[in-house]
Length: 399
Image (cartoon, rainbow, N blue to C red; front, top):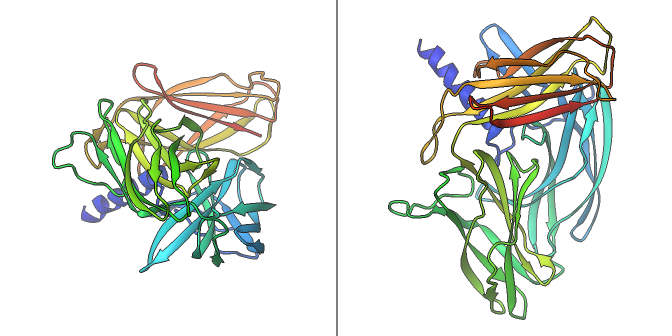
């Protein structure tokens, strides 16, 4: 009984880590000459559930000129079609064996990876010009919802600053919630949960390495679910500039703009100065309520004949119970709507509506759909709703 309960707790943490994944990589890719390794799976006695087989291979730094890097790599995909595959670059400093993200860039491209395929990618990454020191560069890959595919370590690089300006010190930053008893401080790698009636602020220390006074405007960008997600808030922050004297090190606090809808969010702050931006600092937070998230969708084919069956599967989860500060709605009833159309928007199957329950022992849900019309280039859409019909999350899979 002890081992069974321990297993359930482990699997709950695994599923939650797919949703909350701002400070660590959920998968590390190792180049392989043959089939790619599965990047996410669950294991329970007697069974293995593979969630994805996407691997980053042949990753390398082709060229470095100052703070500009030409990078190349390939995506190798195994079984199943993967859509909405996004990628990014993460610049990390290492001190006393502790990794701190100094900069992160997510590229706009969203890839479709066909079964047993290899897709080459070449990108240019520009690190903040004010940085100076030795860093590690990582390639990362996830879906917009934060589902982990793969990552790769490109090694150590040295950057020499080419300009002077503002630099935020990430290790100095902390979050605090308005009117909270004893005014505790939360670190950036802690996911703070917020009630709709609360406000919270970010406090950091920044350095002005320039020879002149700087007038800085805080700029926030908030994304849904993860750093790879859709932008939901863009806010210039405080209308009052923060003044830094020449060579000054200064601590400042700003109120964080928050989304009102229950869910998980990822926010990035930068200081704007005369058209240039400082390095970013990022953190995640949860707006309490009924929270359900579709992490990824999988479809077995790109064409179906009338009378056949489309095997749709998807990874989803809920956040419920005890959070860092409070609680989220637990065991709320969830309704699934699923539909499939062809490239012209014509229905390929009768839409499905059913109640579903999150299973932490198997986060991948299988949903066979009977095809009623020939279906070329199918598009699948699934929607999760609460008991009042309010949309909690939705995702589409297009081939």
